[in-house]
Structures are given as structure tokens and as C-alpha cells.
Amino acid sequence: AGPDGAAPFLSPARDGVVLSWLEPVKGSDRVALRFARYRNGNWSSPGTIVERNDLFVNWADFPSIVEDARGVLFAHWLQKSGPDTYAYDIRMAISSDQGTSWSDAFLLNRDGGKKEHGFVTLVPLREGGVGATWLDGRNMTEGGHGHEAGGDMTLRYAEIDARGSITSDVELDDRACECCTTGMSMTTAGPVIVYRDRSPGEIRDISLVRRSGSGWGKPASLRADGWKVDGCPVNGPQI
Image (cartoon, rainbow, N blue to C red; front, side):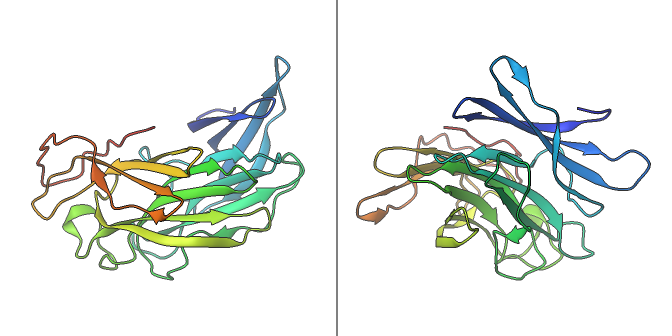
């Protein structure tokens, strides 16, 4: 990576690992999302997924790259959608040739609101494509941020195939902590998602929600920690 590289994300691939990171573009106001692959004991030369001057770059919520069961690469990043500080969308791109070329960017969240959307976790599906879970602020007040904004942050899930088609888009929890990372793992029965929840009484314990053959279950607390805080700790789980 070049100078001032940041926000690394590492994920397993079929024959090694793949890494993404953000990097300022020298002599410009742009930031690039770059990636490289490690296989057979060597790193590839860095490639570029996207390069823009309106990426939403922050220390807590970062882009990612994953490879699916068929060798297709999926990447996501955050991109401004309006002038407000916290108006940003989740955009994705797909590569079917190991990163030589990338598709046009497309939106994961399709509500059209200039609000917060982020903290994405991508996990490969067994038959190809990826499952995505994320925090979606479509029900929050435009221009607001975090627990001080009106409305609630939601938790959503969807599936994306190699053509960029989005299916199974569903809301899983209508009130979640606003800026804590999500986590997801794929089991033989389906996806299992963990995240920091938010009760009406501001209890922000870790919850789990899973999908089985009969569909999505209800969110359930992993443990009654009773962590009551009128604010977001910016600290989420992994699984």
C-alpha cells in the first residue's frame, strides 16, 4: 500500500487471502479503494476498485472485499449521497475476472433517503453470490446522526448474485444500535447474524438472529448483560 493507507480488510479466498484498503491518491482530492491477493507465498500488485472524491471515509466503518464460491469478487464501500455529513450510501461492485475489471457500481440500500447506511458484513453463499447484512437508517430523520437523530436504525439482510441482482431484501430488526459493526457467518442451515441491539430502555446488549428452513427467526439476546448507555459505543461483535 502507498503512504497513508488505512482501513484494511482481510478475507479468505479459495487459494489464499484477499485484502482491501483505502489510500489517498497523490496530488488529488480523491481516495482509492485498492486490493491485492496473496497466493502461493506472494502478493499480487495492487489493483483499484474505485477512486473518487466523495467516499465517506471514517475510522469505524470501512470497505470490504470477499470472494464467493465460484471465484467472483464482491466489494463494498461508503459513498456520499448528499451534503449532510452523515448522508451516505452503500455501493458495491463485482469482478468475475479476479479483479482485472469491475462492474459499474450499484446501490445495496435502495430506499433513496439521504441518510446513514453502513457497517456491512458480506459472506459468501454456498452456491455463489454473497449475503449482506448492514445497518440501515432509512427510518431516521434526514440530516440526523446516531442516537440524537429521530427515528430508529434498522438491521437488514439481502443476497447479491454475480450479475448484481439483489434478492431476499428484508428488515430483521427495526431498532438497532446506530454505529456498531455487524457480524455474520454462514452455517449449513443459513446465515447467523450478530449485532448490538437497542431496546426502548437503551439497553444495548448483543443480539443474534438466524435463518433456517422455515425462514428468519426473531432476534434474541445472546446474554442479558444489561449494558445501559444513552449513546453508541461504536463496538460491535463478530462471529
